[in-house]
Image: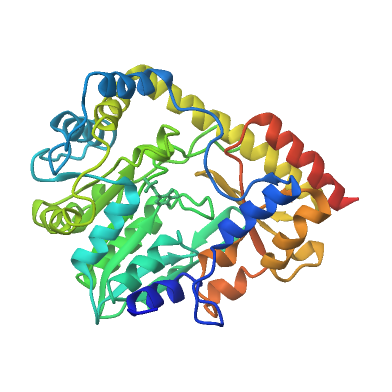
Length: 409
Ligand SMILES: *Cc1c(COP(=O)(O)O)cnc(C)c1O
């Protein structure tokens, strides 16, 4: 095969086989295994319940009304206004809908366009580790260097390793990608943790890019209170150097619609728009009015709160089941995911456990090594860990928990 950038991307994503050919992702391998064995698939994180019908109806009506052609390059005005109103109402962030907001093909395109626009050869892009798998690939696509700061397992779930974060910054750090609530660990970074990131970014004159796709999915703990989601853009001195990314996919359970957005200072948004124009130009014309409605409607907001409450219950159901089966389970404060350590079950490699699990008990997860860089300290510390999703119906989770119990016996 010709070309070389794809090789960098495949290598960054751990997808380059020994034969020099790209191989399937572990997500695809595990989903195929679930299919072949009839296992309950708690690997890939997408909801098995529809998003709000009132929102779907707006999209259906838009299609019926002939909303068929290219929308404006920055997104339709009503969606940009709804995003601005949402950021103001929820976080007190002020934005200009014409210059400081851009609608994208999901958070994934917002992130890709941002990294391609703002980082290149010689620049370092610092992310937390483990990290959402697209980050490593897009940093490689930009020809930049990926550096990481580990999250560590603590009795209260995963937390930033502050010393390691300080050490990870260098004069070449150009972008810092912060994902909170965090996939795959379920961590919700505290204000203090984010303030440290902010201070280091200011000291090194780095830009911060935040992936806040789970902003509405912080989950109540045993005392019933939900951790606060803190956007970095709200911290003192940070609005001018932060690009904030979110998406309709996770909040409203419409992961296939691929409507995302990015907001921040006009000059940075203009840079991102310049690249985004030549990736997809625009997308999702009939979905944009539906997402504008979803962001503005009180009934939909109540639906999202109910989703967060039900996810907290489902997290507890799955976490208890994993503990009973013999895993050590990290407290998850947000997202769709919980991490479990298979070491107490005698597995020092999560990938081996994941390949055995369908046969052992008929459940599928994904190894945390899908979200780490081979040989890093996080990779070594999390070798025996596995990610499971709890964004499945109660009966599916109950079945998974029943099956997992066979492991313990
Ligand atoms: C799902 C997910 C995304 C992708 O969002 P889309 O809007 O579907 O592109 C980005 N970041 C994280 C952390 C995710 O879990």
